[in-house]
Length: 278
Image 1 (cartoon, rainbow, N blue to C red):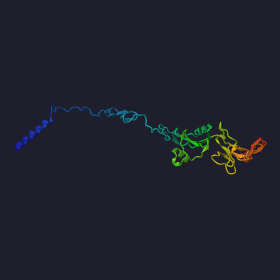
Image 2 (cartoon, rainbow, N blue to C red):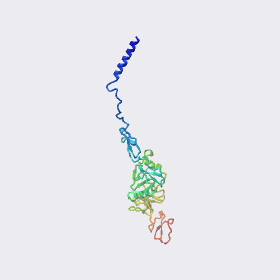
Image 3 (cartoon, one colour):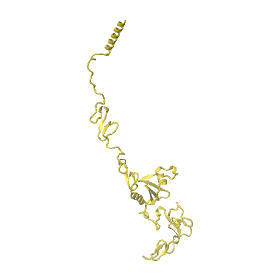
């Protein structure tokens, strides 16, 4: 019985071996045809995987994944930390990095830009504050226009919650005092003896000692403001420097503090100049 079992086992083993072996199964193993990744170049880049050497980045890259560019924006900071490729440069006056098309570095340039608006006869005054320029229209009720680097900033006359960010920064965030950049006299828009510009609607207010526009503010108690003599009441001979008053025999305005100076042959105010010859 044992002999029969042994013979059967041998027969099964022979059959199994015959199924797994085929023609040429006894030959030597074939040479590999070359799998992807075995074709590294001198730099170790594998072309079959799409890699090539990038000299600039000193490594293997795949062109469809990244460019072999000279330098990425942001890696070119100067000694001040300004990124030139992003347009920033150092401004020593403001002690910070800035981009010239967003913010001016030289305040003198800002002054020159502000003064350029003064040549327009439709402008009554120009103010500068920080990087902003406010141009006041000479047209009654036209208000002001705000500029930054030559760009107009929309600043509607509404509550602060409805302002644009730029407008809010100018109106609420400025810590500097406005300064008028227009000279006393502008070509085409003459001023009177007080420096007021009648063409812009300004007249002198003796009570407040400044130029005002009567539709914007009152001159003060006891003084009758005017633009022309037709604005004055009965008894007034003229509208002089924004006040209804009478001339004296020399054309001086006593109500304005003027009196005749024979030595200078003109009307003067004693607290402004002495009536002495020469």
